[in-house]
Image (cartoon, rainbow, N blue to C red; front, side, top):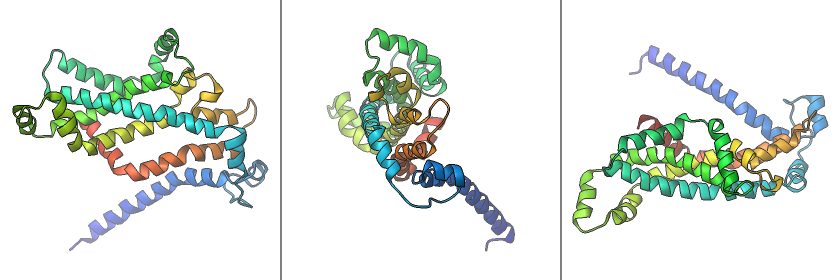
Length: 278
């Protein structure tokens, strides 16, 4: 039988969580409601008021006049190759770090940790920009894709290595004894088994790449090639900001990732936990 103390503790815990959840949801609700309001209506009635009339004119203006549909496509063009390449490299790196012995293995493992987690993007922007300029990649989609592949692959490697280390070594040894090559063991045996971990690393990479701001801002200077987070800047003038259009653009940018997060929530939390504990 549950004691009164335990009941009170549970009630207090759930009450705090509910209150915190409400505070977290309020900005999203205001963002969604504001995307259906006119600028004058927000100025007169304030940001907390409901729309007087529900209109999708803001969405039409953002998608057509502000070319947000092209920013959406640009974001997909940058995100999809980044996710695919980062996880292919991560799978091979994780296999090597988990099962192979070679010189400087510990150093390489430490390097992937430092690059993937401890080094912030602003610290490498100047040399990164110079490198991309020398390669004539500025204003091409490869400019943000390549650095994001490198940085995302580091964290994905830690997640996948942690999963591979948990597999029985007998599985690998038995496959090699049967005549399979390391390449066959990786792609035909380990990868199918590691699908949950691969989905986790792919989900994390997708979220980070979709929300990336600094790399596309610096490396994509053509307004026609910018991604969604950078495109939001166009709603902010020197002296004024069109609040409804900004909220509409933010809604268009956020909703796909909110849906994505709800679908892959379990994988995202698990992946972050594995990366930290590895």
